[in-house]
Length: 203
Figure 1: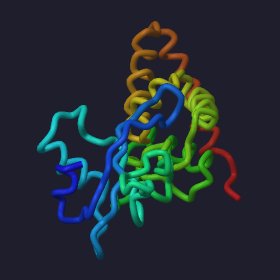
Figure 2: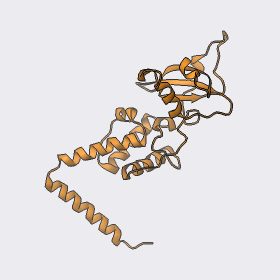
Figure 3: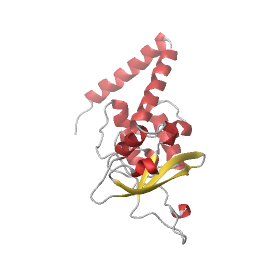
Figure 4: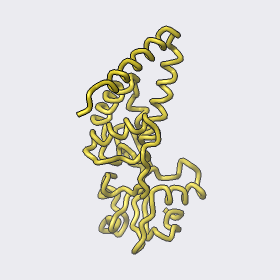
């Protein structure tokens, strides 16, 4: 990809449409980095976004030691590995949860993925998530917040911050649909639970 190759950290690259999950195709850039460079996902994405329309900007950047070549010297696209947590460029700065909803979701994702922590801007599917885990995540979100998300929603917004924004929108809609009496009963129940928790003896 000519534009991506113009970045000083990129030695060479190629670009393909790849199905990350059934029905979920993404534009994936495979690249070999110049020595002693380590650009972030955001850096490369912003570099390309300033030069090309959105539909031509890769969603995923995969770092390789070398591009696989066929006997005739061209890039062997069938030999390009699937993106995963080990080969995918991520944003170097860890973004801690900024709201109570993000904090709860970060804990759920970390538990499902077997990780110590998950950045608020990490992509669930690039950390090893897949449709089966996504279904489990939806179930845990329903249990934690009482709202329903779809797998389609997760594909569109697979980071903690994006999921939190969707959960908050659904929570607001749920409250607005309640009568004043229902809201008051919910607040009373929450208040009783809080007081009971405060009154419980500490170990």
